[in-house]
Length: 230
Ligand SMILES: N[C@@H](CCC(=O)N[C@@H](CS)C(=O)NCC(=O)O)C(=O)O
Image 1 (tube, rainbow, N blue to C red):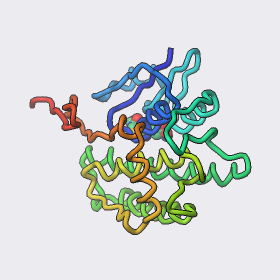
Image 2 (image 1 turned 45 degrees about the vertical axis):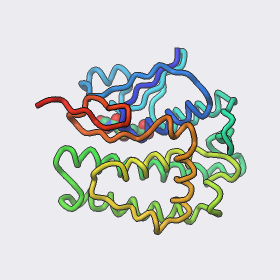
Image 3 (image 1 turned 45 degrees about the horizontal axis):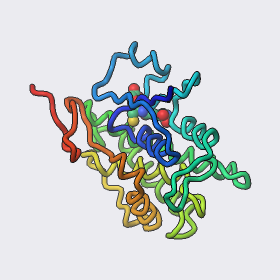
Image 4 (image 1 turned 60 degrees about the vertical axis):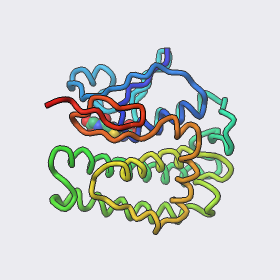
């Protein structure tokens, strides 16, 4: 049995779903459209967060750990070029790759913190920590832009890396939500070009980022949110 617990809007979970598709793995989609109680979520993970993956006897949470496990465990790849990377971290650049990946995940954490606080009524411009989180996003993008050697390659030349996939999921998440944030991607042309290329891949198209906030109970086939009647 293989299953993934996720919420529709989660960029961390979207990146894992893309990885599953890039490998070509079937899974049971345990998609949550409303927020469960802490006790219910705790049955899946002590972090109370999504995603969680069940694969046979193994239960994994933390999206980066899940994705690293999937690459290492399943060597098959779909035919899309360039292919998904064989492993999360290159043998000859392990620490550089780990640092870059951790920084991309910090971008995702800052973005989802802004998002979750925004729908509880605290937004950028009204809270100093969220202001700093927004500044963090720009600084990380600037640093990542310098890590890309060529406009034609991602973070690992010749393959699509976890770095590429997770950065794309986080950036598109910020752009899709009404957070009052403009990432000014035109200042980061190599990242912008990389993301456009990734958007065209079947795995990305099959897992669109859908906008969500409390009250959304489903989606039209084109992604338009369906709201609970109040
Ligand atoms: N470090 C975690 C972060 C996951 C995360 O923040 N998930 C969000 C959804 S995007 C979540 O479950 N939020 C609910 C909460 O934090 O209580 C990972 O990489 O899996």
